[in-house]
Length: 200
Image (cartoon, rainbow, N blue to C red):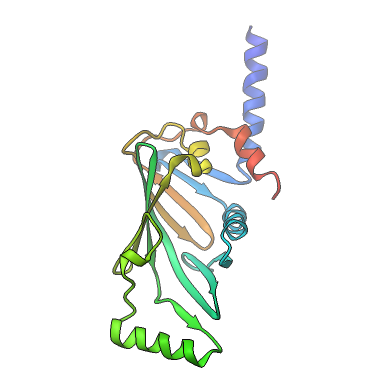
């Protein structure tokens, strides 16, 4: 039995070492840190899934830059994730705009409409015009979606329960998630995590 346990521990240690290429843990501060190559991989997955999102990439200092194309208008948005909260079967998140969105278009009509929207409405977007589950308050964007859609959270934070919160910081392409519960390597589903990141 001792030999089997030792072999199991060795296999687990080897998986952990491999997983550290993608993610590191700071157990003292209850942090999971995703390396830049993982953040870039997740950005590419998001771009592949969202039709109007033509590019999503980490900024060299803080946050992400998204490029969205709709009709003849290109919008560049610089934002950073702020937090995620587990509420039952839902995940509620918050993003913070780091800069005002930048609009580009070759169409004179669209340029006039954008200028009028900025001057007369101050760039305000009514919440009833946003997708379901999304609302904007000043520089903050709030959203919610089913927990089942966020596979990465389930893999990284199996110990997180209803009401748990993750504070997020994205600096120089590295995503730091600080939890309000203890985080250990045993909480990570390393085999599935490695499978998820294998294409990198």
